[in-house]
Image (cartoon, protein in one colour):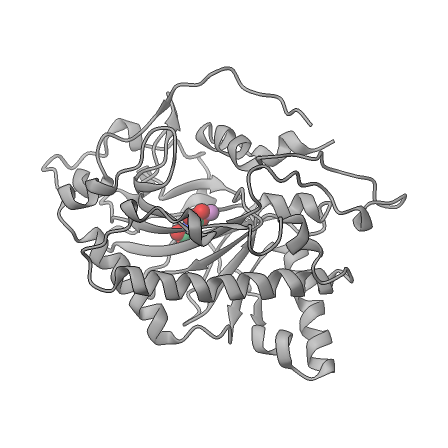
Length: 358
Ligand code: OGA
Ligand code: NI
């Protein structure tokens, strides 16, 4: 189904990584990175409460006794309907693998600029090294990324992978394989929690072999005036699900619920899972795509690793027919290539999912 399309927009890419900007002797935040925050004392970072972190145990979901399993499924449904996100523990990724993947990310951003720029992204495709695009007049995020496609296997573009970093490729391959297992299990368990056939969401996503998975290493340099910038502006993800490995020490992620912001705590070794817009659409609004943002630390850099999972671009998705009925009319349109619609809105600082509502 056609969605309203924007007139051609003037997308722009930051001319320098933020990591380079902060080396400059000028200490003022460049105009283009300054955000206009509402004059609201709630936006004072230190006043913000922690979310009451919903923790889900994957080992209970996949192999617990039947009563533990039932209980964990109920919890899963409830947190994804209210928060749209959760902290996943006992997911089977070893803490040494989590340390290794964080380490290779750190090593990448520590490379000289000219080495990183061998993997630069372009204005029209987000894969590679660089910042997010923004429309003319929109501020840039205080964030540099390395964005790599990890699945399907045959779509890996090794030209963008830093081959000369020892262990980078092997570590990312192992990490991606494990995250893919988690993604598959979680999509199955979410379907079960809604009393659907367990493969419903995987099927709507085009099947596990076809799902596009991108891993993005996010680098957030510190800023001496953190209140003037934003690591990532408020957004929900255009994915079906996102699996995030937070920094081990430095906080920054916040989630919105009922119009209020909450800090996401660091739960050691947990993976933070959030529902993206496409699963909200498929579930006809039962699962909530979590709105989140990233605040910047005054002194410390922060590195996170988000793996985003989406159906193939040519797969039409829409609310599952089992979740549409007299009591629950269809709330969203069907759509192909939601990701491209998503980026048009994201670059304008707007939410794409609103354009999908019937
Ligand atoms: C993202 C994202 C959060 C973080 O990459 O979409 O929201 O903590 N990342 O880096
Ligand atoms: Ni996000």
